[in-house]
Length: 392
Image (tube, rainbow, N blue to C red):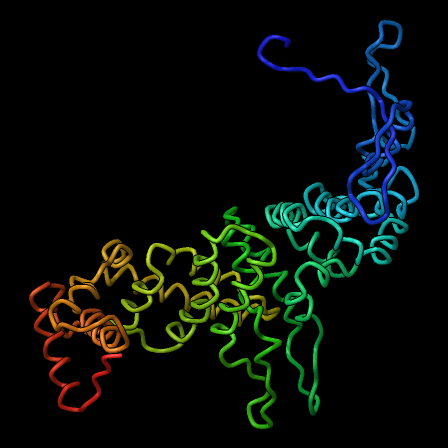
């Protein structure tokens, strides 16, 4: 113990690895042995503490020069360094975007050749490094490295398959992967929220699945938002990410196109209320994602779209119910409906509750418990008359 901090002294050691394991076999080694097992030369520096040479930097692998040159290079042959610990390939991508360093060509080539070896690393460790890339000032630097080396295909294949441009009759769509990288960077300029950035990364995740070509209208991606919600769940489970933020990411993916029609059409109060109700307290994040999604190279088009989004936000402010709707809860719950009408939990209760909520949002009935109960009974009578009651 030294004052308020604890100093841990570890002797120099050397390591060897079984090719199919990440668990090292350690033994006492020299300082050179110890420094050679570092991931990159910039981390393979030591400071002498003995009286005669105190303060002298031990730099066996030109780490100081590489720091000045902003270069990432492994102390040993990169194949050896990455074979010992494949997670170092993820760290290379992470350092590149955190520090804005470039990768040595041999290091990059080794990552391409050995990308499949990332599979022996626990998913938790891989996920941890991936999320650090997403928190960098410009995540696309690391993401592009992951893609170009084949690591992205190994980690999140649903993302990697977004790359490329398909053409039919001379008509091509934008490269969805690189558009996505730009969206993430755009968002990163304005927000440090990790899961909002992840939402940007996955906002178009289902476009490869839903892609269709129509000779009249060109390329379409109908329903990619709904399919994307399902893919988000699959990716979260595969990456072993916490389930708590998953619903937030799914909401952003599901709603990321919702403000766009509003920005083009005459904006009605009910349409804005519905958006506010669905987005809830995450409305500001959703609008930020929508703005980041504008990646056109046409300045006039960008200006027009941003002006339209300004109109949507002005209408939201005009409606003046943001705080109320963000925390909005229906005055009558599903349990209330079941007790009032003596119905079991099921489809009928869901239909009645949805119609009641829509009636309140559209202004057809006031936000009042008794008015809502009366409306519920009215809807139930209508369903009885039409024979659409489902008690299953």
